Length: 293
Image (cartoon, rainbow, N blue to C red; front, side, top):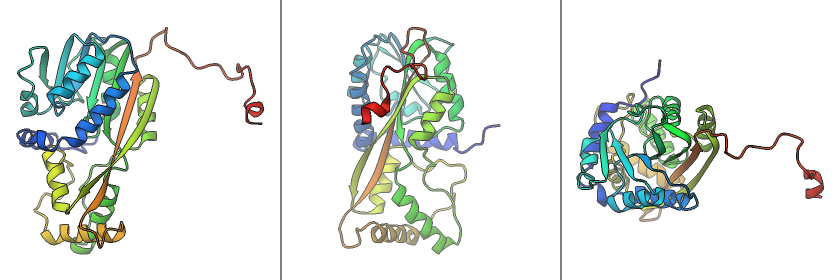
């Protein structure tokens, strides 16, 4: 039985609330999509039928992804109906309210599955990856971009220490992000061929912890963990968290401080007999020792 790490009703509520002002705070999504499109630019096949998970992509960026894929039939899916409504004017797109843990597609129905900021908030990530692979036709493309393990790691440490001091206990405030090695293992376990996992780092500057949390909330990335602290937290907790953050990261005397976002990019392919295969051990023409010498 899958552990319920995330409260999906709360996640939908947060995304719906963020939909109205989302374009003002989607800088991280924009940067992530730009990198995703750069990766698509070196992939030449046409992907006729495509599912794009994550309606927080703005219209121009969504059009750029569709153009890079050479797609004809496009499904955009999100758990938030308000986020989906932002794309309702495009007749080329079929909008589907759906959780990315439950893909509403038959086996081998799609040529590509693209996911932006979706797979970091799933209760059953292995199952979702397996569903995505099964929904792809042979040699179909899977791409995902999502926050990685180093995202907000400084803030997590500061908030942990502040909560111990003030509340004499701990509750989770920041998602348990996985790292590249863990995602790589899961993609292989799901049966994808030729997997590639890499990451990029972004440093974003803030004047206060309240500005940071306002941006996180406006992106629809508030705390949806089932084990979250459900009572209102005291202002002294946030003030102490920022003080500890500044002291421990060299910003004690500065007006601003930087926070870290790691974005992991995943690429995998549905297996196909024509794909490149790794060489058998011992079949190399030259010894690595000879090359290194």
